[in-house]
Image 1 (spheres, one colour):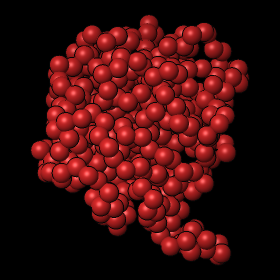
Image 2 (cartoon, rainbow, N blue to C red):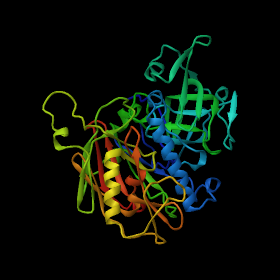
Image 3 (cartoon, rainbow, N blue to C red):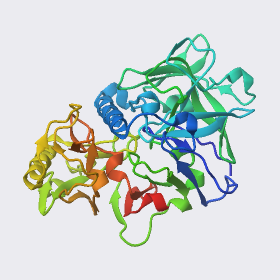
Image 4 (cartoon, rainbow, N blue to C red):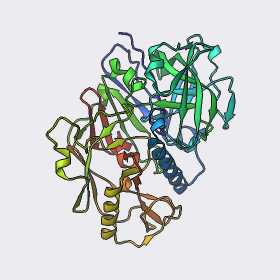
Length: 441
C-alpha cells in the first residue's frame, strides 16, 4: 500500500515526535507522538523567561487574532491561524528533504496547507534562528505543476505562475502575517517513519510575527490537503490528543495518537457528531447549552434542533473545535447569559481585567478559587469542566473567565479541552471526550 500524506500545520502547539517503534505505512495500526509546550525543559533553546501571567496574556491575544481571522471569508479558505512567534503554544518537530533537515513548525488543526521558510528568501520580516530549508540541496524536492491535483485542491490559496508553469500558494493570517511561495512534493520524516511525496509550500516571501524557532506551519485540518486526510490509509480517519494544562509549571509532555492508538474508549466517554459544512478544513460540532451551577442556559429552543424537513437544522454545526485557539468563543447571546449567571453565583469581588482582554474578572490571590461548576452540552455529549478549563490568571490577583463573545465563528478552544482525551473518528464523523489526567497518560 503506497501512502502519499500531506502534512499541514493548528493552532499553536509544539510537537516533538517520539515514535517508540518503527511503524510500516502498510499497517492498519497506530502510533503516538509527544506534544511539547514551547517552554518544556527538554528544549532549552525554547524555554521562555516570561512569567506565567505573561504567557497567559500572549495566549489570549493570539486567541482574539485567530477568531478575527476566522470571521473573514477570504481567510477561511486560507490558513486560518493567527500566531505570535515563539509565543505560540506548541511546535511540531520533523525532518524534511533528502538528506533530511530537522525543523520546527507550528501545528494547526485549523489549516490544511503545510509550508516552511525556504532559501533564498525575497524578504525576511522576522528573526530566524533555525536554518532555512534549501530545496536545491534536496534530491526529493519536486515543484508541483499548475494542472496537478494538489494545486487544484487548495482552492483559494493556490494559483498558477504562468512564467514558471508551477503552482504557487499564499497563506494569510489574522495578525497581518503572510507567506508566499512555491508548492512542491517532498519527503518528510516523522520519528522513524519517512513519508514520500508530501505536498508542502516552500516560502520565499514571508512577513510574520512568528517566533525565531518556528519555520512555518503544519496543518491538521479536515480538507483534502491536510496531513489527516492524506494519512487516511494509515490511520483510517482516527487521531486523538490529550493536552496537559499548558499554563501550569509541569514539564510533562502532552500526547497525540494516530490510528488504532487513537481510539477513545472506556468509562465516562461521551461522543458528539462532526457536522459536514464549508469549509471542510474545520471540525464543526453542535453546541446545545451551557449549565452554570444548576442553571441550564439553552442556545436555541429545542425545536431548532428537530426540524422534520430535509434542510439542515439551524443549530447544527454552530461551533468549531480547535486545538489552536486558547479561549472559547461563544455565540454572543449565550455568552451574555453565561456571564450573567456566573456573576450571580460568584462570591469574589469583581474587578476589571488589568490587561483589558477579558470581560469578567475577580480579585483572587489563590490558584484554585471557589467557582461554580460549568457543564458544556454538545449534541449527545455533556462535558463537566474543571477549574483549569474555565478560568485563567491574567495577573497575580486577577482571575478571569476564559470565555469571550464570538463576532461570527464560535470556537471551542484548547483551555476547555485540557485534561480531556479528545478523539476524532472521521469515518464515523464523531469527536469523543474522556475526562483524563493528561499528565499521567
